[in-house]
Length: 66
Image (cartoon, rainbow, N blue to C red):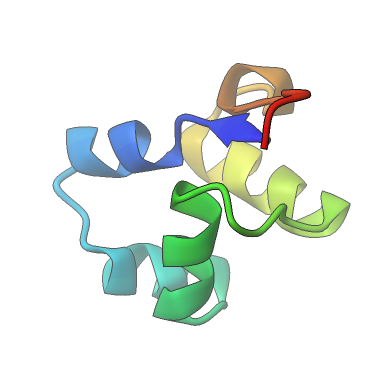
């Protein structure tokens, strides 16, 4: 799944650790999501969307490519 998490985080000058605290996950989880190695659960995706005040679809896009 493609996502804009790294761009959105960078726009706010947040580190992965800072975003992880906001989302109540590990920094490693944030890193894995940003690299497309881990797809967030639906509750986590909603949490990300609320944090950035965006629709889930504006942050995460389904991709058939790995």
